[in-house]
Length: 82
Image (cartoon, rainbow, N blue to C red; front, side, top):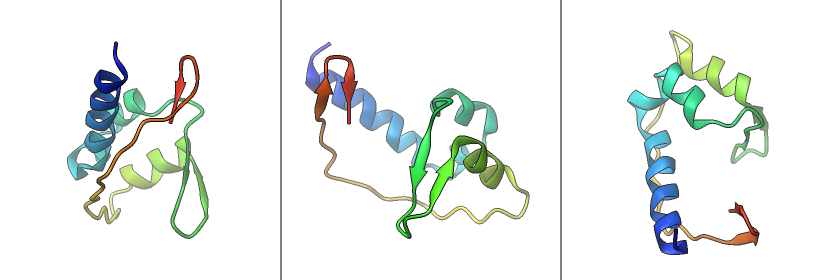
């Protein structure tokens, strides 16, 4: 797989996570988020995978649309990219 192909795949997966209907789908989120997943919010707060799954599946969860652009791919080492 070329780096361009990998970037396209990763963008597609990231953008899927931005969709409200996917964030409300616990089964799909469990597939998309690695067991060691960690999210850092704009505030600097750290969220574990379990916290994200619980928050998104809450009946009263308010899930705002996400918009992101200008994605880049950086290879940290073979088999590991950001």
